[in-house]
Length: 148
Image 1 (cartoon, rainbow, N blue to C red):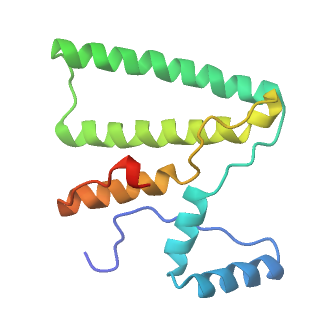
Image 2 (cartoon, rainbow, N blue to C red):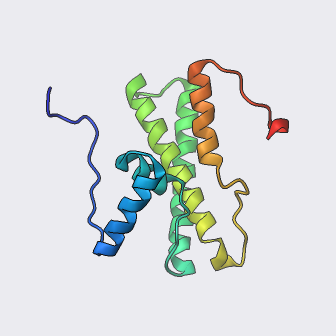
């Protein structure tokens, strides 16, 4: 239908005119559309963790619950007793992958709370994954790791 968007909208208001001007200047200099710039900035930026170790404990507990749920899903898949349609399965897969990536990013951002260094050494692994998906969709051969 015309005028209908099939994806949800994410909106925010910068706290000050300075933030608004700074965002607009960065968008202009990036050469990207504002929506693409904001999406890429949010997805590829480091996540700043604010709080205490107790907050991270909550995240770790959530990851353990997620692990248990994933083990149940794998067990159901192996036995053939998985009641989801293909579309529902793909949605679940996308949601779980997004959650896993976000948790890794948050835990890497909180590494300093535990006097640790982030575990992911390649800061651009998400963009590399996106490029790999793009190459696969075009049917191009993947670049070997020795060339990197």
